[in-house]
Image: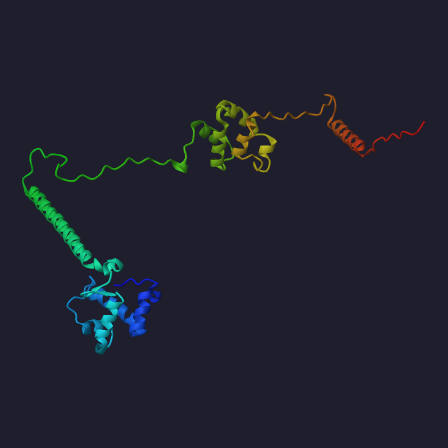
Length: 285
């Protein structure tokens, strides 16, 4: 519980006048009287209380009770016959405390009756169902039971595919053909990005047939085979096989002749590389 005291109360002209009439303790005694009224007289009506009882409720000496009460009336803090001035206006929360209490009790009573009514209805329903269960079953037995609450239908579940994504059939065929099976997710993304430019299965089979046996792909146990995504992004199925041009040798040449010709050719190439370039200096005529 509390009361409301405005911040301007200590400097109000009525407060200063009360202080002049009965001393500095007068305003404090008035606040104590307000606190008493908040608890025991929430309407602010002190009717039936003597001056001594009002002074006692304020913590004021009883021998000066009449002087104290007269000062309150003179400063218009207490109206006749014994009503605190503007109590309803300044302490509205306290003034309506009894009404709020009655409203809360009525609301609680309604809630209790509602709960009791629900409990009675549930008990009656359970008794009816128990009697129905104990009764002989009809022939044929109705299905489902109209009086029985049916559980909500279970929503259909979707089967999640392995890997969390759907692979197109043509990509699956590419994956089976490609010799290096790494980074399948990146390869699938690159495959989808190709769109209409995806190669046919026949094109892939033809390209991979010679690429599997190429020097780059067979070197170091296939270390240089490109990743599937790199192969697709680079459209490597369009590559052409590199033809190896053999060195021409006459049919009558022996192995020693061929080796000697090859050595001479390599020496000539090395000499040409080591030969300094020709520098022409143009002077004045």
